[in-house]
Length: 626
Picture (tube, rainbow, N blue to C red):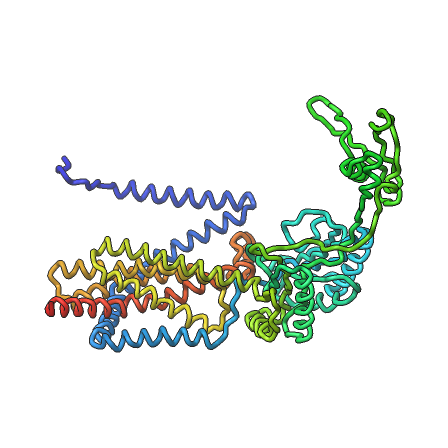
């Protein structure tokens, strides 16, 4: 009979062996089944898993055991010796960290890194926008779009292996604003779609942007042609954007033209072409009503306007009912008549003249109104209740790696402008969005640190230990700044900001792990020095495992490592390549955490114990003095 409290269960070795053999047989039958049915992917996958099991059982198991029993204790002893060395020189270590923090900030400021809001990869799509004067006939726009499309095809060449398709749009979906779905007869677009990154075989599509710019520049007099790529994130203003604001519209127009001529005369390298969003030549048909004649005839301006609206846009006369559906019946002039302003002007307006006893009368519209042709503004934009004109431009592909340099050159040029009374000229666009994003992420980091502060004070009941862990977070930024400087990487405000906020959580977790175990050893009667060394030696394993797992997990995302597992197991071709859209967008975030966490591991294992020791010494000194 089994004794009380004895939960052990005796297993028959023969039954266990039979179950194991049965499992192997079933595994082999499943593998053979997949091969017999031509499913090479599942068959090769099961074989690979079996080989990994054999590799672990007969090779890796012994290696891991020897590493854990021999090599790792030796590494822990070496670390403990180095920690003893650091604890004997606490001020040297702490002052060195502060000097390194200031030095890393100085290096970052002096190297003038390219700062972008969102990173940009090689374009998957290139769009060439054609903008003709407002009112251009759609057939004219279509013919000019074909000319532009032919130039684009000449740049791409015949049977280009990296080009998937070339599509032209006229009027509909031809605007630079991706949310604009209106049909505009004066706009055209040519879109070039490239094959996915893995099929380009190292060919950069970014070079095509400048080639298309050169080929389409000036080919259509009076037209604005813009070349751009798809947005890699939320819609953002153009990198170069100058805002001119004021109340006097005429003066605002003159100043905007003067600023545009001034910046164009400087020919700042990297600026594609400054374009104003102010449309000053929009054609307009102005109908001026002779009010005296209309009053004499007893006709109101509303009647005259209603007749023009009915003739051109139509008027609902009735509805046609088909079951539960109702179809409105609109009455208006025929197409050839309503597009002829003379035919509309010669229409008769029929009304009942109450001065003549309610008799029906008919008067030509030409006798009551005069039609004039003139140009007007296409629209007025405002910001903070002030009228505004924006001059904007993209940056050429050649200068995109030096975008910050181009933006700073434009800013410096604006400082040379004279002062205009009542007019404000300033730089905005993506630069302003970047500052807003930096302020937002800065506030987010402060709020997150404040919440961490409250949690740590509650857990440790000590402000000193909390300050030690938060100082570790600040020191971890050294790794981010030095890593970006050493590898000469661009600063992506959004992705790096999110990475630093995420890094703080991992660093704090490792700090809590070490401080809490040190307190535990002290409660067991160990002195402070020995408790710090022993806690570091024992907790070194989970700290390194956490950091190593996170870093190794982010490396493939950081370098853009791509592998097709289905193709690997089905045909033996892994289709490995590096790069792509993911590395351009997520690379800055991944590298931020990799650099920061790598340096923060050193901070956790060496500097945090030093700060803990100095904090305890300072607390004891203060207690003795009080």
